[in-house]
Image (tube, rainbow, N blue to C red; front, top):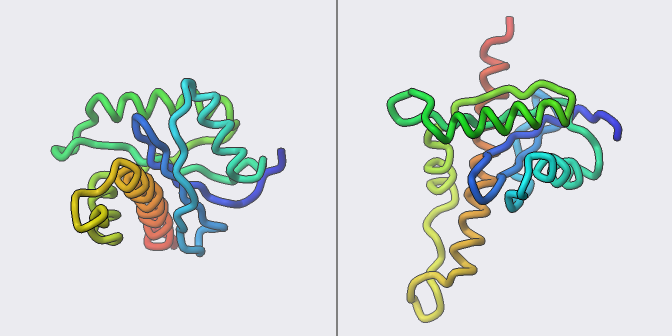
Length: 155
């Protein structure tokens, strides 16, 4: 596998992983895909690398789900644990970014979920597709937030 200077943003959930990419610090983050969580971190990492065409990312930014109060709760601890294993597999550090409200912002950006047939409630497949889209949009928000902070903090 070769190293490419793509920066990958990850919104790690219990069921899905939202993925976004940027080609460098001055690029805009773009939603790429949503993957189903695999049974292991190794399988998650393999799926992410496969999604990138077998090329290792240059950097990874992982959303860290702080609680509303600003403390790290159980989900943040699970995310850090996932990251420890992923770092060992990828061979590069993972940058954490506060992801509070990223899914909410993604939903605002996308608008409401479409209604089902005849104006009824959305079908299960429509709900799954919408949640998957929210996850990759949230990954783009997390990554863009990190990229914007780099530009702001640059000398």
